[in-house]
Amino acid sequence: MSTFHYKNKFSNEQLSGVKCDACGYKLYTDTTGFEFGEHMRTAKAKEWLIAKEKDKWLNLCPKCKQALEDKKEPNGLKLFEPQESEE
Image 1 (cartoon, helix red, strand yellow):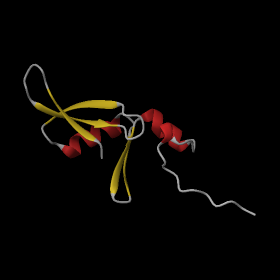
Image 2 (spheres, one colour; image 1 turned 135 degrees about the vertical axis):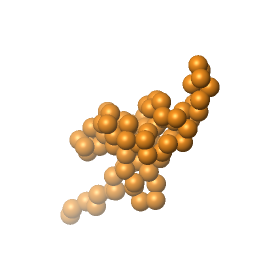
Image 3 (cartoon, helix red, strand yellow; image 1 turned 45 degrees about the vertical axis):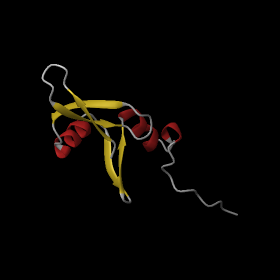
């Protein structure tokens, strides 16, 4: 899971966000501290794909999620297993 942390410039609080694993787009969820579950719920509510893929978390923004659903590999991220050719 690509989570990042940043500081609120007004309150100096530590906040969390989610970064797309394909294109690097950042969603600033404005959740305080390290509330992992809360910023995941915020991303999902904004139509992000948040899923565990083997031993790693996969975050995709809505645009890259749509590319995955259309069976296109978003921004070169190798998400699909190679297909064996039929002969």
